[in-house]
Length: 298
Length: 310
Image (cartoon, rainbow over all chains, first blue to last red; front, side, top):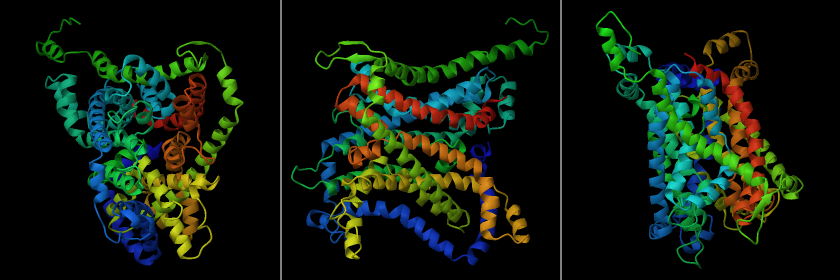
């Protein structure tokens, strides 16, 4: 199946560079292309711009649809950072997302190495089953986990969120890492083995450093998954002490009860999107390579 | 293995290799497999078990076996079929629109100039915006009176300024579809762009020499060669759309014809605390999604095989 295997190469620089030159010649003959590009940019950015716009408005300005805030103010942002539910949520999200990312990378790279390189039986089925977990509907495990966690005291705790998140992030990281590990030339490992290294040393000293870009890709996608997750976040928590930000803003009311919370909700929404947008800005190439390499979604 | 080897260097090397390959593979795979078995497989089995019981509302903890009762109740309830219909309409329409838009965007990006990197980054923004935030965002834009859409319509004197977008059957689902298309069409475009980039340019040059029009080139060359990429993207998005939960939860809480299977199961379980029926609903959702998932796994089977062969 080419589509899935092929894309890493497509994201590679040389191919893009040569084709880019050829394309530039063509683009002159198609001024319509610019209209298309402008539409894409507008489509992708305007809605989020509108959210930013609303987040900078206060009071009566909120009920007018100005394209620019008449008197931009950061009051909404100030107010959400004084809201304990929101700041708790941010802290919880950060703890959960980093823990999930690190654990998924460590366990994931072990499993991926075994699947990519070691001679064992049943690898096809193991990877197929692991991959099928990424397609599980969250609701099917949310209810039983809710009962289980209530029984063992993990309900409404961060650990109670981290464990199922790792379960969903692991298959993602395994799948991405297997395809990256397989691209590392075997000779390098074999050289290390001949020099007396154990398989495990070959893995930690040779494969891991060479697969750093793949590990970064898998890590970013795991982080984004954990930051984004909503269903389990609202099912397995009951109070702001354990809620992550997506769950926190779903229960958001303004800083005061009589206030229309539109401005503060928008500010909170913009704020929690910033970490992910920064990741996209910094690692666009890596993310695209990861998304397309196994056609596995983050 | 106490190999009796002739060369002095060999046993030394053997010993230094430590664990045998199979042992090492076992150690390396066990944590992941155990976790997946405990936290993904076990809950599903538990959900099936829960769904085969009848629970007393008055006495917590009291339950008795009731094989199939909850499933009969689920499958004969109007709510289930409404959620079923909504989920499939949502999935069908949004995935179809995402495909059309995705192809258009991918073609546009493919034939673009320098600055393709910047364009890709921009296209990733909707993908990076959290689903909950996406829902909040479109709720803001489609608000009655002060939302962007309503005020634009009334400024230009267009019809529809009096529509309460998220408060009417049909429109609410349309907004939900729109929000999903916004968030995921760019993702589709990136998958398809990767597929486009491996079609050799020579094929097009040859077709041009033979006098094929741009449309002919698209239909006869691009689409057939893009087929594998399109299929993966479609199955992928279908799997996601069938599980949709965040969007209806935030946009409407499932009101006005937007209740999906996942959300319905959630409501029975969490809000109404009807564990048996709720579990039956989530098992049904699981079965529906897994049917599509099998198609997906079959489809990427070749890829999995390529990744695991020696």
